[in-house]
Length: 334
Image (tube, rainbow, N blue to C red):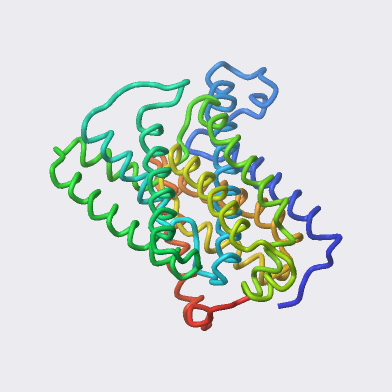
């Protein structure tokens, strides 16, 4: 596939992202008066636009950007196009925390954050430190060891989630299943402010390590020969991007496949240079989730479909395409 001119990529992505966000703000079961944009429409239109549509688009863009950027980093660290933070058990840990909270009926707020989000983030942190602890106990801080530890933790947490679902009543079980589908349904800007620092801090960390990512994508031996501290770099990027994923999942639930699809598609179009790839992935991931959320609002209107279902429906065929293309059989696919 031919690469786009470097100077045209970023402006096109910015314009496309703005267009997708603008269209999504006026997409839904309820048609809005355009005057809602300047607050001169009736109160209902103005409230729907400013308190529901705008924060929902902002949350979807931030969440998609964070998940896609984290996926790009993990694919570079593990030199595998199928690697994502979800592979490391972060999603399962957050889901376990949310499931325990919903099963026990724990209700509280912490700095304006709901109990489910707090417990989900705690579960994500637990999975991060558990994976790191297992790798450190094994004495081998390698990509293979981290992947194996992540898969083991993810499967263990998933089995515990099934246990809590089984012992829950109908209402609790439904809440758990609904949360596991993921979603960006919000009212107001609190959730946006909760996710924003995680995504921005993660983006800054990744930005400072883009050159190291380019070298590490070629292999640890090459990176070491060029003076890269592979061990420390992998730790910083692992914890940084895992915290981004934990922050997003704690608010939105596990929204899958974005971290796998978007980096791979952008890499095919733009190339493997992470200095150019990172901003493209950030903008494309956010735009993609905004687009999926818009679809979720209109496919079965006036009801809404959880956006995690949309991303899974798109991600499943993409995974099969990736497999048929032979990428799943390659250790390196850049």
